[in-house]
Length: 128
Image (cartoon, rainbow, N blue to C red):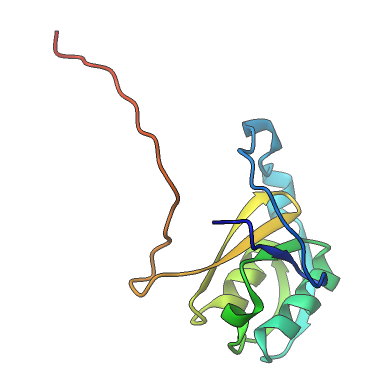
C-alpha cells in the first residue's frame, strides 16, 4: 500500500511506514509554531514545494498523478497544519502528520473520509 510513496523533491523513493510511538508524536509547542505564508493558488505540486520551503516539513505522497489539482492560496501567519489544511481544501487530498516534521498526503474518498489500512480492535468482556 505505501511501497510506492515518493518523497517530495525526490524522483523516486521507497518508504516503509512504521507505527509511531506516542513519544514521537507532535507536542503542543510543535503544532503551534507559526510560519509566514504567501503562496498563491497554483498547481498543487508547486504549492507543496513552496510549503516545504517555508516550513521544512517533509511531505510523502502516493504518486504525482493524484496531485494534478490546483491548490488554494495561503497568505498570512499559520501553523503548518492550518496552512496545509487551507491549501488542500477542496482538492480531494487529505493529510496526516506522522511526526513533527513529516506529513503523509493521501487521496480522500468520494465521501470525504479517509480509507484506512487494517484496524485491530480489542476489548474485554465485562458481562461476567
